[in-house]
Amino acid sequence: MSLQRIYAIAMKEWLHMVRDRLTFISLLLATSGYVIVFGYAINPDPRQIDTIVVDHDKSEFSRLYRAALKQSNYLNIHPAEMSADQASDYLRRAKTSVVIEIPPDFTQNMMAGRTAQILVEADATDPVSLNGAISSTGEVARQVAAHVLRKDQLTTNKPNGPQVDVRVQRRFNPSGEHTFFIIPGVMGMILNMSLIMMTAMSITKEKERGSMEFLMVTPTKPAEVIIGKMGPYFLMGVVQVISILAIAFWIFGMPLTGSAVALGALLFIYGITTLMVGILISTMAGTQIQAMQLSFYYMMPTILLTGFMFPISGMPEWAQKFSTTLPMTYFIRGARGAFLKEFSLLDMWPNLWPIGLAFIVFLWASVKSYRKTLG
Image (cartoon, rainbow, N blue to C red; front, side, top):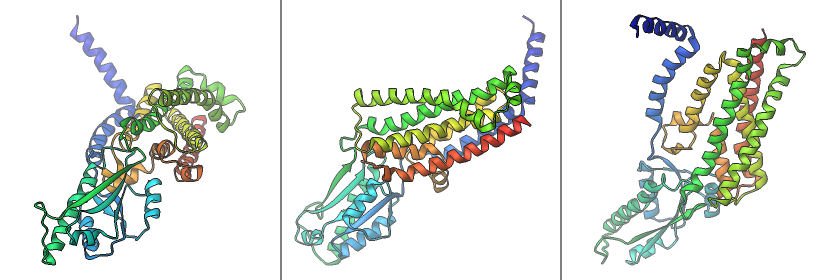
C-alpha cells in the first residue's frame, strides 16, 4: 500500500469537488444554514396557540379571565367577539386551535359555592401539542376565580378554593389516535420524496448520457418536453396514492369524514406541483449528484417546517411565514381536513389555490431554466 498513491487519488477527488462549485458551496452553506434555521425554528412545545373565547357570562370574572389568558405564553386570544357556532366553524376550518366557552351561569355558580364549569373545545388532529394550552385554561380560571372571591370578600367552603371544572372536548380525533395525525403527513412526505427524486434525475440523466442534444434539435417546445417528462412519473404517483390510501383505510382504519372529491383535487394539484419541483431541479442541475443534493435541500424544510413532525404554532413568526411558501404545508392541512374535519371542496379551496400558485411559479421557472439549457 502506497501512501503517495492514496494521497494523489485523494487530491484528485478534492480538486473535482472544489471545482464543482454548486456542490461545494451548497454543502458548506446548507450545513451551517440549516443548523441555524432549524435550531431556532423547531419547538415541540408550542406557544401562542390561536384561541377564541366565547363569553356568555359577561361578568367581572370573564373579563379578568380573558385578560389573564392574554398574558399566558400558551394562548393567543382572538380579539373578536363570536358566537359558539362561529367559533366552532373557525375550529373546523383550522382558523383557530382552541375555543373556550364560559357559560352564562358561571359566576352565579361560583358565588354560590357550586362547581362552575368552563367548556374547552380543542382541535385534536394533533393530540399532543395542545396539552400545555389546555392545562393552562383550567389553571388560569382557578386563579382568577379565587381572586374575584377575595376581592368581593367572599369565601368558599372548599378546601382547595373555588371549584372550577374544565370540560375538554377533543374534536375531530376524540380518541387521540396518533396514526390519524401522522398518515396525512406521511402521504405528503412519500409523494414529496419519491416524485421529486425521480423527476429530478430525468433531464440530468439526459445531460450525462449526451442525449440532451437530440432533444435540442427536435421541434419540441420546452413546455412539451416538461409535460412529456412528467407523464410517466404522474402515473407512478397515482399508483403510490392508491397504495397509501388502501393501507390507511384497511389496516389503520383511517376515517374519511370529508369529500372524496376534495381529497382527490388536493392530491392531484399537489402531485403535479411536486413533479414540477423535480423538473425544475433537473433543469438547474448539471449532474445526477447535483440533482440529488438539490432535492435533499428542498425536502429538509418540507420535513421539519410544514407541520409534518413539529407543530407550526411552536415556531417563531418568521418560520411560520416561511412555512406558508411550502406546498406541503397546505397539503397536510387539507388532507387532515378531508380525513378528520368533514372538508368539502369549498372548505378545501384555501389549501388548493396556494399549491396551484406554486405550480405556476415552478412551471415558469422550469421553462425559463430549460431555455437557458437550450442556449
